[in-house]
Length: 355
Image 1 (cartoon, one colour):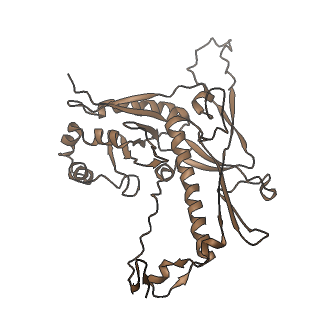
Image 2 (tube, rainbow, N blue to C red):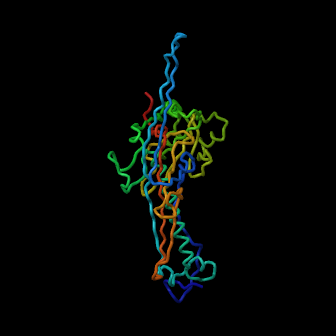
């Protein structure tokens, strides 16, 4: 039985261990609008062709005046940033260290290197997953390739931005949520703009607004919205009026969501490095479709990876020659690239009452 650390003449019992693991947020990854792209180089090119249609003008039968214009192509380059994270295990990390989980099981043992190694590798992989989600979120919210260390600095800013690269201005729409307004009246313009901008030949009919808590509550709590749902014989009606609003798009219960006016509103509360992923009282609207963006991975700078498709993560380990340190090195080389910046628009809300 373990000794009481405050009084070595008495013993203590142990409760179940409490292990706190940070929330693993992954909303944008779950929506599937960014597909993985495993590059063999660190630099890639995005090419774009835009077809031009027009209604033909009639001619006399002995004329040939209508000539089809050539389709022009454009291209931009981007580089993939490098995100290493390393760790190590030293003899002092395991020498005489008690594995508290074994005490609870009634078999007091010391910490083993293999157990500590597994814990450290799992922590590294969580950090890689966090980078992937953050890379997509940053691309969706700003058009930027996430690279806060300045390794992708450009003439116009701290990193590559797809709006700047293509010479575009990001669009913004405001949803009226004040007393006397139906938010749906503001939403058709958003849907129409996104539909008109798809230009892939497909008809997209599912649209999402990923919202900050403030924007989500402004719409879900709108008096007109609640009044309308009183008369709807739907399970969602009960959720809007008395429930918590979950289970849209197959997402887990952390993400409140509901459908209204042709849009699915999804609340995203994630905070990375102390900053909210979604800017306060804002959101981003986009269609659910393939080709919106890509999560591009680049190979590590090792001979075994040269000119080969990249892995999502790399991990190496080695014991020092002196046998006094087990080194763990890992990296993920990834860029969240918004391929179609015109299909991600900023959403705000206007709480002013109707006059």
